[in-house]
Length: 166
Image (tube, rainbow, N blue to C red; front, side, top):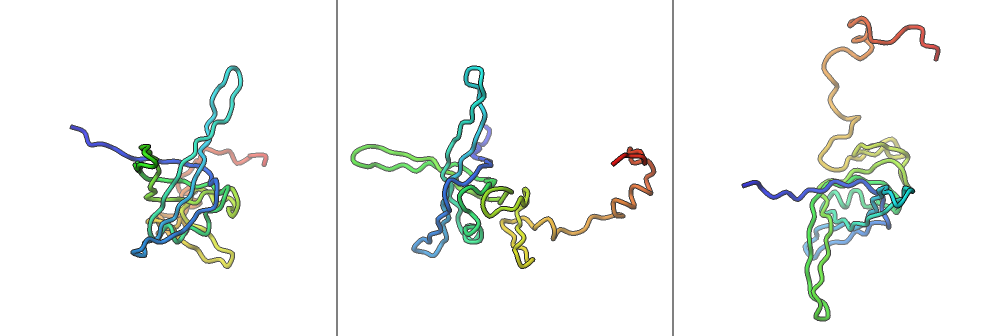
């Protein structure tokens, strides 16, 4: 028998600024909502359709990125779906939210200067802050072997003519 899978990956933009709160035990809880757009054909025209998702990010990662999670910021979310059920005024209610395991700040939107898809951010003072379990791309160990320029000259033909007009 196959195991069940509950995994979601989304890229979208925040619909509001994130809220950071703490549980009675001192655990950080960062909550925010994202909108994920998709194009669909309606008749003979393409229209944008948005889906909205509530996201919860627990612990130190939520504390670290909370200040950067502002309305309009694009983020990548990796997590799982959780359903909360309760009864209110005799009516059974439920809500599905995403519990994020990892969040990446992406380029664009307020507070983002086109940082790309990395999980690190350069601060104004030149320092770098890392989020999640991944090391920033600038801090990775260097590749083995000669630099790319040496590989081209050592390998011979790189597939490009020397007389490129630009």
